[in-house]
Amino acid sequence: MEDEERVMLEKESKKNRETIMGSTETSVINNDPLMLEKLVDKLVDAEVQQAASTLVLMSKQILDSETAEELRLQVMKTKYGRKIGGNKLPRFPQVEGLNGVIGNCSVPFEKQLTSSDVSEGLCRLSLTREEVIDSILPLLNSTVEDVEVGIPVTVYDSVGKGYEMTFRSWNNSKLYVLKQGWIKFCKDHNLRVQDWVSVWMFRHKHTRNLCFVLTFKRGD
Image (tube, rainbow, N blue to C red):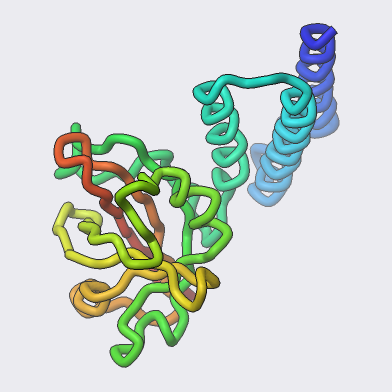
C-alpha cells in the first residue's frame, strides 16, 4: 500500500509540473524574464508540496538513521535552495583552497548584516536561530562540542584565508554567534550594514575540526 501511495504522489507531482508548464507559452517565457521567474517559483512550490507529502508518507514508516538523515537533508535542500538575498547558493562552498578537505557540510543559508553585526563594541556575527537549529546543530558532536561553552572554529573567506573564531549560543540559546575573530573579518572585507553573508559549516576531513565558510555580496 505504501508503494502505491508513493507512485500516486510521484504521478501527481509530475502532473502538477506539466500543468504549470503547459499553461505558459514558451515564446512568452523567453521574452519575459519576470514570467520566467514566476514560473520557476511555481515549480519550486510544487516541489515543496511534494516534499511535504513525502514527509507525511514517510512518517508512517520506521526509518533507519541513515535514511532518516538523507530525507532530512533533502527537505532542507528544498527549503533553503531558493533565493534569499538574491543568490541561489551552491550546496557546497566554492573555495579553491578547500578542495578535498570538506567533509560533512551544512545546507547553506544567508544572513543580512545589521548594525549590531558590524559594531566593534559587540564584535559578533549573529546567525539566524532557525537556520542554525535546522542546518548546523545536527552536525555537532554533542559529547565533545558544547555550543553553550563555545566551540573553536576556523572561518574561511572566499579565497581560503582562515580566521580563528568561536561559535556559541548566546542569551540562553535564543541566539547563535561567531565571536572573536569576526571583527577582523569585517574590517578585512569592509563589511557594512545590509551586506549579505552566505554561511556554510563543515567538518574538516583531515583534522575533523569544525570550520565555516563565509562569503558575501553587497547589499542595496
